[in-house]
Image (cartoon, rainbow, N blue to C red; front, side):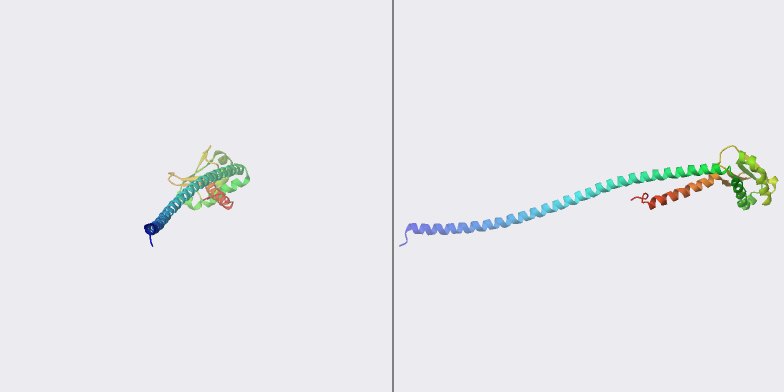
Length: 214
């Protein structure tokens, strides 16, 4: 015979089983929701982390680029200074050689050659003026005039203009009204040489990897 207590016990068990089942279902749902929430959160965290890393990597790359650029800029500046110093030193040495050259017999040959190479232009000048250092004119005028006459120029069409300073040596020719100029001075040669020296120095520095950095 089933007593009331038995019924209550059965009823209680059924209720408890249902409650447990319901609880398990809810726990399962909660677990799934929690899992999804955690998963979403993890994804967001990963995304934030990725963006953070990207930003920091970009910042790091930017900082690195700035630092590298700064270093390279400093290197370039040093190389430009080095090039400038080398060019100046070589040009100064060249000017000293020019001054020494003026005291050699070859200097007169140089002046005569400047005249011979200028014949076509001087023929267009008609009458012309020859500028040269006063010291050179005292030493070489007669020889240079003879060279001009050998090239077909009338001495009456030639005016000599001694210079105390202003050129390093050589000859400068002007037509009668000074509208045309033919510069055969050392100054022009030195300017051309400075350009060539600068190019050579740049090439040498490039070969050593000390120029055009970056």
